[in-house]
Image (tube, rainbow, N blue to C red; front, top):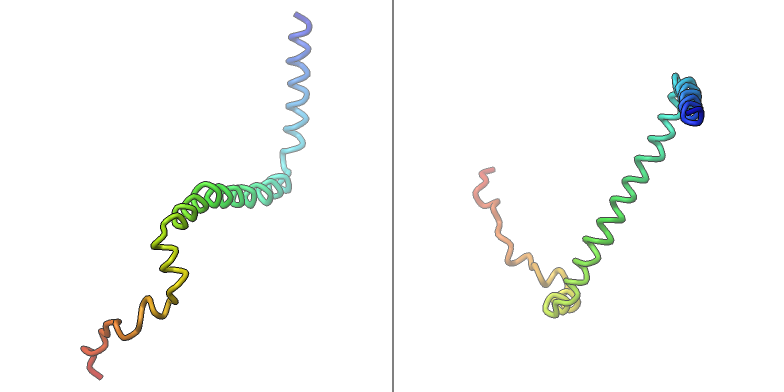
Amino acid sequence: MDIIYDNFKYYDVRKAGCDICLEDNWFLVFFFLISFIPITGVLAMWVVGKFVYQPHLKYLNNIPDFVEKIKETPYEDLYPLENAKSNNKDIIR
């Protein structure tokens, strides 16, 4: 029974020490957020890149028509300006 009581006493002493230390310590919260927010952002970007972007890229590279069209045809030839519709004819100046 003494061992259990000693463990609770030790816990109470440690909790009281931590409460005193963290009472008005705004720097601890500040530094925690300064490190936590960027780490979560980088982790989220890594997860999206690894499990969403790379598989989609592999899928697109396995489509033969898509790869050939992108590699052979320049952008200017894919969407020529002559085929663009002009909506400016109705504007009165």
